[in-house]
Image 1: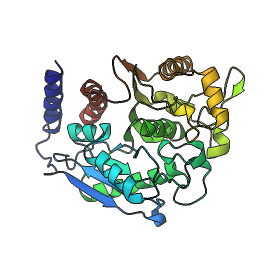
Image 2 (image 1 turned 90 degrees about the vertical axis):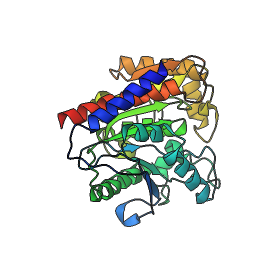
Image 3 (image 1 turned 45 degrees about the vertical axis):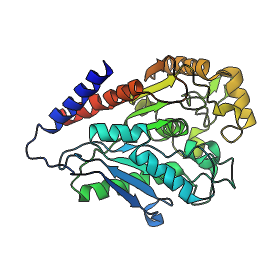
Image 4 (image 1 turned 180 degrees about the horizontal axis):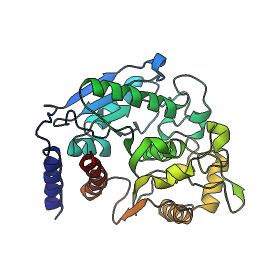
Amino acid sequence: MRFFSTVFLLFFVYTVFSQNDDSDFIEKDSLIYIKQQPSKGFYNDYILFIPKETPLNKKIVLIIEPNNTGKTSDSIEVHKKSAIDLATKSSVGNNIATLLKIPLLVPVFPRPAVQPMLYTHALDRDVILEEEATYKRLDLQLIAMIKDAKKLLNNKNIVVDEKVFMSGFSASGTFVNRFSFIHPEMIKALAIGGFNGELMLPLNKINAITLNYPIGISDFEKLFTKPFNFHSYAKLQQFVYMGKLDENDAVQFDDAYSKSEQKIINENIGYNVYPRYLKCQEVYKKQGVNPIFKSYDDVGHWTTSEMNLEIAKFFFKILHSEIIEK
């Protein structure tokens, strides 16, 4: 059954992009490595993967997947290699880009061993407060990369929407979740899974306890010098998924959450990963935020072909409607 679903999806992709005989396509996969350009607002490198058959002169959507090395290292080459692997073969983002024929941007953010509490790949509180240029406001650096990539793509006659798709799994899923709270107006749709902790909550308090970033939004305006845009966030199309056997829990580790944050989460949202996920769903729905929430039996901290196909279908429906409208 999964085979026929995949064939059907690929057939539909081919049909949609074949509707305009005047369109040309990228003939082969290409990987572009862009060096940091502080004058443009980004102090780290990024990667742009353009899959073969990406259409030219037809509006599509750029997809973003933040890098997640899975460990600290003071060697940028370690993070670079991991990001290249993510861009070219080992990520949900690459799978979506290849299936839907859309470009993928992957930043090469470092995660320093010399500053182990700076969990850059999850966009944690320490990162938001960091002043050193390399690590400062990685969300804004990513936005600068997106702007630069759009110009680069446009020069290649690859036309992308003003808004982007975002995907992420594990720490990169957490990054996307937090980024979406800060900049919901930039995102057309997102898919995140295996977020190793808890979803950020659209709440100022829970059980009379103040929820600051990255748990909630109590100090949002102070940190980001703008109010939380609930209207834009609530409209955001989201696909949020987790395996029922996932026990990868960053909440219990100091590099991801402070002791006070751990206490708040464990006592008010849940000590174990999956029950905590259910509690987050409850909070979202009560606040009028309604992602597609999915749970998968017999799945831990990994993705399966079934999950990848559902994510592809989620993005495809949105991309397809955009193409038809154009």
